[in-house]
Amino acid sequence: MHLNPYGADAVLLAVNLVTRPATTPDELAERCEESGVESRLVRERNVTAADLAAVRTALDEWLLVVDAPDEQSRVDLVNAMLAKYTEHPRLTNHAGDGWHMHYRPDNVPVGRLVATLISTGTALHLAGRGITRLGRCATEGCGNVYADLSRTGRQRYCSPACANRDAVRRHRARAL
Image 1 (cartoon, rainbow, N blue to C red):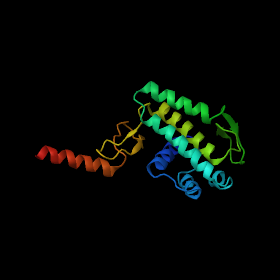
Image 2: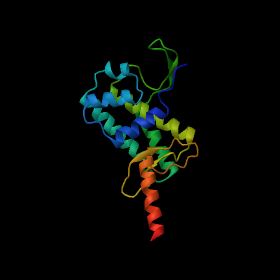
Image 3: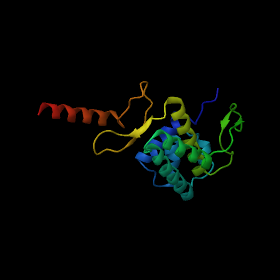
Image 4: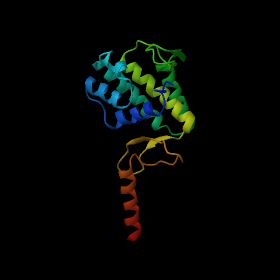
């Protein structure tokens, strides 16, 4: 069985790159690999400054999805990203490791590859888990983004540290 690279890992890659932006092509390659993007897909293509710029553009578009004021706006923005970065889905066994879906041609620059992964992964995440499953941390002054992978769909914080910090703040406010 071939794992789907367009699922939660792609959305978490977007969160990672928005929270801690890659500043060099090598750093972008490392972060992609850390997030589960096959190393041969990144290293064989020699990540460039143009790839880094393309990923930044895609992440700016993705943040519009995160910050969309309502469901329809969010859907429209995701659909715009899909139209821009993906192509018709197709089965491929390009590496000889099993048949799987691709939403892009095989030989695209890393910037386009990452943009395709993020846009498709986000669409699958929102369709499969719920259209509201992206957001910004509820802790005052934080503003980091999160992808809600929780069972209940009630995530409001970017990390346990922010959730704890907000709980302490609320507790102290009640004690006054």
